[in-house]
Picture 1 (cartoon, helix red, strand yellow):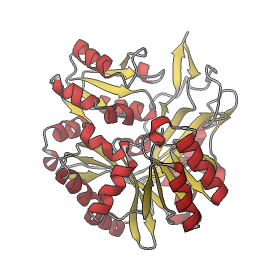
Picture 2: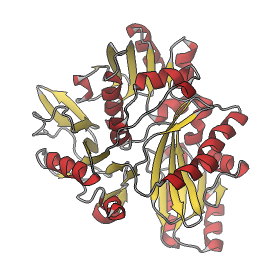
Picture 3: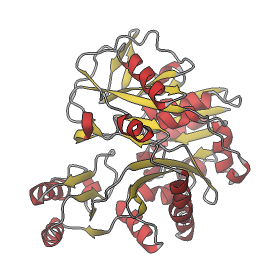
Picture 4: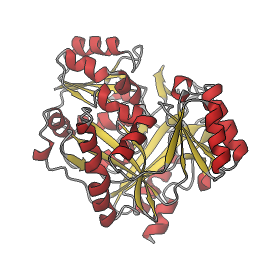
Length: 427
């Protein structure tokens, strides 16, 4: 099979490496791809992942047997619809399904309507009303979310009125996230450990993947600015069998049934961002695709052919697939450019990658790189994801950090405490 993957980050690199393991895969193409991906797939760096016509054109040109649309933006824009219209098999939700991530207002209203546990909330379409509500409630911390897509950064946790006011004005008046901030959701601040669970679903059957724990803050000790993710571990020790059963009964199945009832059958990877509160598991957010960097620890543990799973989802036969997982742990340490998630330079030479091919237990996924004149250069904020597998979480982390310490570029930045909370739970 010829497979076309849309996207150009660490998540897509992880997807491509897992798809390449399948005996059904003959050749992989990627739009736009990146430096690391270009070693394993034929890339089209001059076509954007959101260029629907461009991607359809390439799918025709390469005669793709399957198109995997990985990022949120093209899914929300309706890329899957356009590809299906031209007769291509796809993996990813259509536009009607992708709204579950594309609009936080939609997802919160869906949860309210179908009694899916989540934080209490209110929706506002102008900043004055939002500020009046915050003044009246006077409860902190409080959570302010831009309605639309914001590269995983559209959430502000305000510790007092001043921060809440700044957050609302920056989203709604200064439009730091563009039209994604036309509406905001203000919700109660939940407490408890966070868990990410990605699920395969064809709209009627849902099969959860291995749970994971993301680290969103830029600095050690969960300090600093929110990022797209500085590292992950899997499985998440807070996600016990009892909690998994509770989530299936009260969250996972009710969500796909709710989407069906709304005429928005969801097919693809549905991501559940959960918090295990003293009152049970609650949904913090939905994503309509594989998470990044969660994918980099979840997919290496998958023991079933990913192509088979994706085709079964397209054919509505996921119930016939036995999705199996390795009895192991995985860790991913993200290496970023100094200054991320704010401003950072590009084009810095990366050294130490020469001997970092795929081995039995470590792999370096490229997120923001380009390959030029025989050298890898930085080309983004999050540059690499150094993933390792081990019999224990400690051994996986030791291997990840050992590899991290041999890779370098000017002003490289990474957290030194990925997995520390998880290790404390496991004792």
